[in-house]
Length: 300
Image (tube, rainbow, N blue to C red):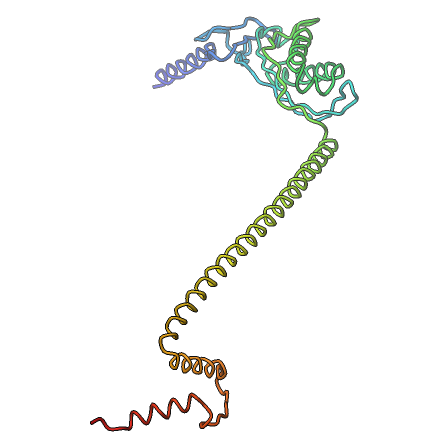
């Protein structure tokens, strides 16, 4: 029984020792093998590899992919006109020589990013000092980014090489500092307000002109309609007078009686009007009396 336990323990120790000598390098990484604190070899190809067990040899990994460094600070920079501007930028970079990188920069990607941030900012400051705001924003922006990329690439290769490659440098935003930006926005707002007021004044004047033109056309239309109405009314009154004359000419007594009726109607046009007449001297009453006498006479 003791023999079986000894064999099992020995196998476990052997497997642990064997596993400590094997390591896998991912295709996205470099494998760096250390021997007593010194770089023994660098594994650049993915796959299974072997080393001596710790503490004789150890392994660490460094990212070999394309990395991005974004600007972190918002300190303003001075242009050639002494204008204070704030820029946002990013850098695309990768580690190409892990040995040089570890010896001259650091053990991981964060160490390179920290030092690279300082170099890129200094390069931008130097180039922006030579250019105006107009050149920074539009006319020479591409040239500025190319110059910064060249300066940063020279800085990481000179002296003690960093073992990295600068792939691209880009400006994502360039703007005035907040105090100047607010002043510019206020001027823009005042200008837009002035244009809006001018448009409102022009619109109000045009509305008044249109209303005046419409009122004039309305007055002309109403006057023409009244003139035509009066003309038609005059023609109707003339025709009515002619018809009355023809009808009254056929029976003068009826005509006189009808005129009397119209006179009485005009005199008593309102409710409550009272008229005092002498029946003996009124043609109307005499006509009514004669009409009543004829109605009372019996037919034979």
